[in-house]
Length: 126
Image (cartoon, rainbow, N blue to C red; front, side, top):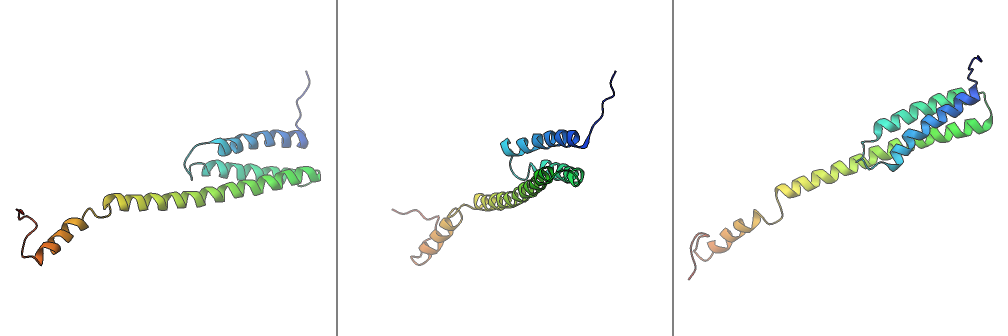
């Protein structure tokens, strides 16, 4: 039987395959931001590990892992920014849904409108 050995280039190929899996999950997922932030963190760790392994390898491997590192930081930043925007939109919707425009203002306006005529809002008109 032959002993299985892993060289650095084969380890870098395996690590690149592992990196592509969470990348495809982030790109093709339908989760609401920042739901994919843990995957972006995993991609960042994998990219740092790949860059450390490729540091003394060929220039192509270094470029691949530097671009993977940049891509993972970019994805994480976009997740954070999109999550903040979505939370702001949800808080605006909650505040407008709790007090829709004109729901409270209309009866109060009617009270003031009838006040100058000497009528109350509960009085019936004939």
